[in-house]
Image 1 (cartoon, rainbow, N blue to C red):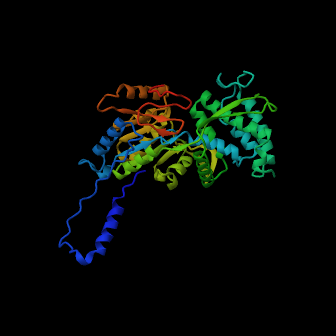
Image 2 (tube, rainbow, N blue to C red):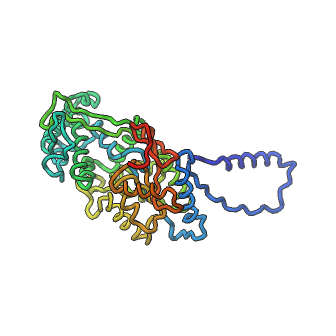
Image 3 (spheres, rainbow, N blue to C red):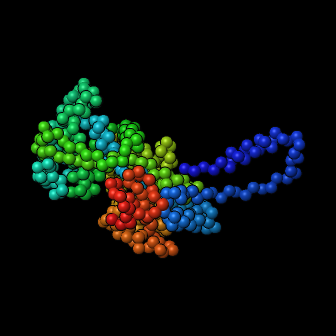
Length: 430
């Protein structure tokens, strides 16, 4: 984030003038000082020039420098979190961190129930095969996970045993558990959709308090910020095939802060535009990222909207919150209407997202002047909006903007095109 040194220079110059006061006459009357116009700080090294200009124009039109600005009717912006406000997905990173730390408060019986909870029985999608080429089914992989977790629970000192984490994570049972639980997460989502998969993965926080989950999330965020951005692979041991056989799971390792978004959030707030986050991760997991000062986003806790679990006091239960819409896709629009439009009377002036989960909120509000799409070269519904943005690259007032990034570093690029991890040439559309 850039900061001006003018106030500091002015202070030093004032001290110098005071020191020379014996020979300087003070003015009879001080002139009134005009209120400073807040700067629009968007890094020209990271923003596509056209995007930068259009967002600055939007701020000028709707922010506090506008003649029509009404502080009682403050405009607001809504940002997706994973892969929009940061590089990669903090909920997926937390799942792997939770596995690696064996940070569960579940008995073997509770784990066995949750791992199957609301997941339809039978085979997964054809892509989810074991090393022998056989499609994996729910009961086979869950039986293997039951056996692994029972061993880990009985032996790890953080659960019911006496062995250290360093020791227990070298065992075949742990290696099998890590590979198969992450494989199962991917299989559930790709086969049955996020309406099943996104609540399912947060049920593993059952019996943990909100503060425990937030502490775990912070540790995961910190660890992942220090990791390299690579596609990590985990293969279960050939010596422990179990019922599901040998499988391989892959994970996009590492997270990066997106300072371009953090600076844009600050600029919005400085110009009287409120900032909200809409996420399909557990609300408290993202709140620990978005509100913690050390990460630099400075979002208010009450301005983070995400997935919610039922609670017994401060303790999470393995049940999705009643009467709280799954905050993904059409659900994001529903939550914004319920929590923001119902109170304010109008929709967001700006929305940012990257995936099909953001498609609806990017396009559903007539008040939205700009929909910013972080270009991940995705197909599907977000691909349709990305194409609309690409087709409008020469238009004066486009509805949607594409912003490129380099996935090997997590940095935004001053172009609309994106350079995918492992690729050598950038692309505009997927």
